Image (tube, rainbow, N blue to C red; front, top):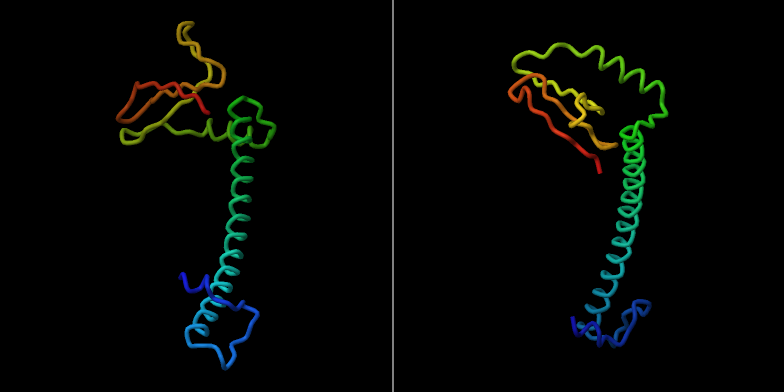
Amino acid sequence: MADVLDFPYTLEDEPAEHWTVEQVLNWWLLRAKSETDAVQEQIVERLQAQLDEGMKSLWEDHTQVKAIGDGENADPQRQQKEQQQSEDVQKPTSKETTVATTTTATKKSDELEPGTFRVDIVGGHYTGESFVLKPS
């Protein structure tokens, strides 16, 4: 590759009869590198656009989930649908595990911090277990 740096011609120059075989090969190497760099730049631009779009979508979803977690769900249709789904939950069978989430505790000593959720396992292998979750 050191020979490419010492190459006295540019990509715009066309090979001439007085060029050596080494100079012609170096010129072709420069040309191939230039084309490869152009394709690489296009790929990087497309991937960066996809990344930016994905990050934007992710942050929008994060904001939505955070609003739901904070109890600020502004979509009444979604609230009604979630409420209907919670009412339609069937009794768990012995092989199923059902998770019940609550945002308030029944005992004074078990009061939860705002923004945290207590998950009580009411069926399945881990029946009776309880976990406190705090979304970040």
